Image (cartoon, rainbow, N blue to C red; front, side, top):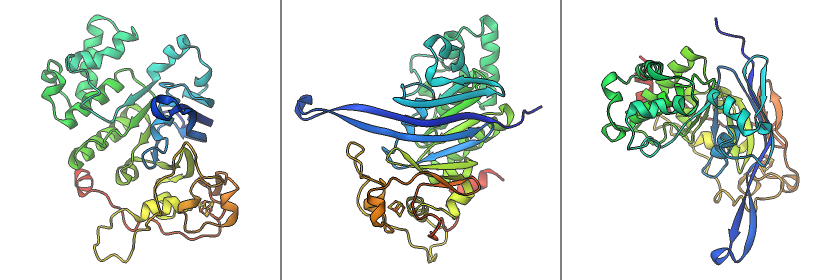
Amino acid sequence: MSEQPHRLMEIKNLKKTFPLQTGFLGTGGTETVTAVDDVSFYIESGETLGLVGESGSGKTTIGRSILRAIEPTSGSVHFEPRKGEVYEITGLSSKKMKAVRPHMQMIFQDPYSSLNPRMTVRDIIAEPLVVNKLFKGTDIDKRVLEVALRCKLNVEHLRRFPHAFSGGQRQRIGIARALVMHPRFIVCDEAVSALDVSVQAEILNLLGDLQEEFELTYLFIAHDLSAVEYISDRVAVLYLGRIVEIAPSKELFFSPLHPYTSALMSAIPAPDPDSPMQPIILKGEIPSPINPPSGCHFHPRCQYVQAECKTMRPELKEYKPGHYSACHFSDAMELPGANELGEPSSIRTSRI
Ligand code: SF4
């Protein structure tokens, strides 16, 4: 019987900074880059939270900080794999973290470089079980075969090396490796970005099926908005290390409350070439995180900017139930959203 949903992940005031050597061979001293700036959100058990933003917005840093693949600078991450069993991830010793780690896994972006070319598929999938000493002998083979079949690989595939597989098959090996530990939570870090569109659809459908069967919870990091809309229950939008909007997926795509989200959504190509919708062209580039703009980080590119935007940081506020935005004027603006769903046709047909 499936359990009642609860907050599986609760992230509060997460911050991650990196030192940066400047000048020729580091002679200019050290500056600080704030990759993730005071970010708070939660993920319900069994849901998929999409995380979108431009390159350098901090998406991957958030994913890795939550798993403690890198150490957050400050903030807290509460993880409740089962109701009532709570871990404060950021405060755990490495020994205790080892016990929690099997519950939290990651699927990587590049299915070509994330698999060891010298290991057979069987050994790649079995590796987490061996390292964590969870299974022994024939139990390992039984478990490896079980997840491999679930990920649409076969017995023959287990004897081969990664170079013998296509991109989609390699990503299925990566998914099987993440799944072999029976995790509760998986960070999918650009898991379909390197794949062809037709293969993307196949992998997204597989992730959806596995989620249902194993009651998985996903943080789905991507810059492909169609893929994010397709798989996510809710979506968070990042800009220069801060969450600017978070809402149920459809609401965020079609009724955004933040000018940055609105610009992103307006840029989704409309299936109808005669559509009157015009994309909103943002001025300039995303600013440097070394010296971000004051107040609202988005103000130099925002067409609705007012004087207070340049000095006052807008907090993430709930404007509608479950719909949060970090803009001083979200309750006073009507912004355009996506015109129509820009789903790749292969995603639609693969669902038939
Ligand atoms: Fe634009 Fe001001 Fe809102 Fe920032 S706070 S998104 S600058 S209107």
